[in-house]
Structure formats: C-alpha cells, structure tokens
Length: 201
Length: 201
Image (tube, rainbow over all chains, first blue to last red; front, top):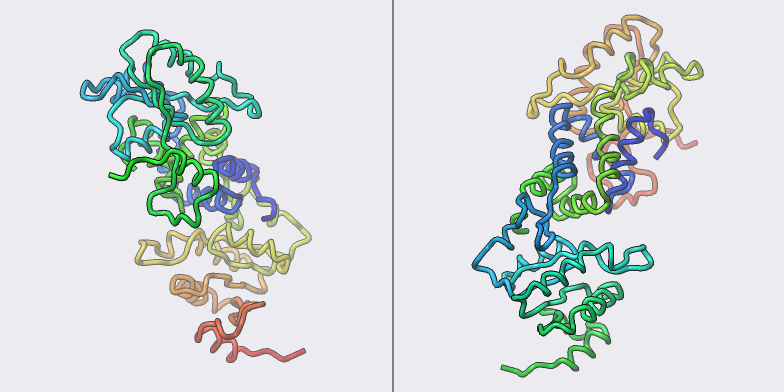
C-alpha cells in the first residue's frame, strides 16, 4: 500500500499494526472504521483502553487481574486455598477456569523465564509464591506451565525453590489429546503417554 | 469465554470487538498485549489514535483526508484538474492511486446513498461536487463507485444532478477480471463484458 496522504493516518495505522496478528491492511480497515464512526464513539473506544491502562490492578495475593485488592477467586471461601495452580498469565487462569476442573487458587507468574528475551526469575512473581508457601497452609503446588523450553525451565526453577518445603509439587499430565487420532500425535507426546500410562477403569 | 475477573478488562475487550473483523478471542489477545507491553507503550498507541480522532482534517476541495487545508493531490499542479474521479471514501482514492492509471483529481463523497442505513444525498459531499462543476474548468466526471445497488443509486443521482452541464460523465468499465477464468465470471458481468466489447488491437 502506497504512502498515506496524512501523517496522522499513517501514525494511527502503524499503531494498529503493533497489535498481535494485525497487518497493514487490517490496520487501515480499523483506522477507517474509527474515522467513519465519528468522534464520540472513537472517544468511548479510546476511553475504555485508557481506563484499563491507567487503572488496572492486580490481586495482592495471586497477581491475577482484579478490580479489588484481593481477586474474586482469592476471596472466595468455597475454594481450596491449600492448592495453588501456578500459571504464566491471566490467560491461563481463564482457560483453566473454563474447564471447571480446578477448585483451588492461582498464582500468576507474569511470564516465563527466558534468557533469550531477557526475562530472569526476578522479573517474575516467584518470590511471592515462595512467601505464600513459607506462610503455611499449602498442601500442593500445581505447575501448570506450557510444555516448552521456557515453561520447563521455569517449572524446574520453582521446583528447586520449593522442594525442601513439605508440600506436594505436581505438573499437568502429558499425553495424547482427547479426540485426537494417534496417527497425528508427535513421538515425544506419545512416548510420555506410554510412560505415564494409567489404569483402565 | 467466561466472564473476566475485571470490569476494566471486560470493557477493553468489548471496545476491541467493535473493530471490524475482531472477535472476542482476538480482542482478548490484543488487550493482553497492551497489558504486557507496559504503560508507556500503550500510551503511545492510544496517543496516535487520539491525535487522529481529534486533529483529522479533510481537504477543502476533494474531502480526502489531509494534514493541510488543500490535499497533496489537489495542490499538485502536474495533475489534470479538469478530470474529477468521484469515489466513496479515502480507501478508493488509495486503491486508484495504487494503479498509477489516473492523473486527474478526486472527489470523496464520504459514503453512498443508502436509505436502508439512513444515508441520504444530503449526508454526502454531492452539493460540493456540483459546486466544483458550476465553478467551471471541468471536462469529465468519472463515477468510480462500487457496482452494487448503493453505488448505482448514487451514480444515477449524481448523473441527474450533472447531466445539464456540458461535461462528459463516465463510469468504470465493467467486464471480466484480468487473469480470471471465464468459467468463474458471473452471468451479469459476462453479459456486460459482451455488450461493452472493445476492438481487439
């Protein structure tokens, strides 16, 4: 696409392309949409994003996004506060909540250890996780991190920090996906599925 | 996707879903991206869009978007100011400029007549087009509007307004697409391509 006739337009399109999955064509379509819908509606759009950027708060305990100092999950007495599920970001909290298979509480790390991207353990909420364990009342830590290099590095780092405390440390089961064809499962996954086989009930 | 743990997050995601082609999942991914990249970068992102919303200007003559009172095309003396290409929006200006086949000037209507969407001729820049013709110096008006009901209604409306002035009024050639297989051309298009056949050179 050729140069735009306006620097303001160019800047707005460039801003949209910074969003994940948005190319120049989509960004231009979005910008045109903002121009077409009129000033007031665009102001409302920008207001919602500005409010989030300025007022966003995180739960003091689990670091999940929250409008209150303690998030809904941490302040829910019906949940099992002795089981902490450690996740990378708030996205995984929502994913696991959607399964309705977990009734404990969370701990959001805010990323994974990644020397390539300059993310060290001190950039993550690992110390505050250790503090929660030190405070007591924790029976189990579930390391629900992605099964890739960063996820496994982070899981191992946390495991070493916590192994001397008398708690159970678990991780997600690895195996074939439900509904998948065995033919398409990769070797590593299939190998772990055999290794960690379970009793047929 | 379940309810979000924060109203601010919910509002931001809803704001993104108002953009064309953005569903709830993509909107959530974009919101997470803003949260992750930090306050300053999100401020820059919002600043670019706010500037466009508040400071956007349109060319006094052709109504194309422009940072100056008269746009680059209208103020370019090398262009043919006696030929006006009438288009729906600034998107079509860019599309036609990309072809490098047009050296005249433009007139941006700002939409098409559409009673269904409550857009009447008075909502569009039709009067100012007539004014440009009345002022004189115009030889040809090219009606480069989409070949659909709204486009054809608008073209006919403009044609009736301008037919009494001594100018040539043309429209885009309709025919088979270059590189297309005849098998896949629709009947109406193929019919018009035969009707408006041209000499083989």
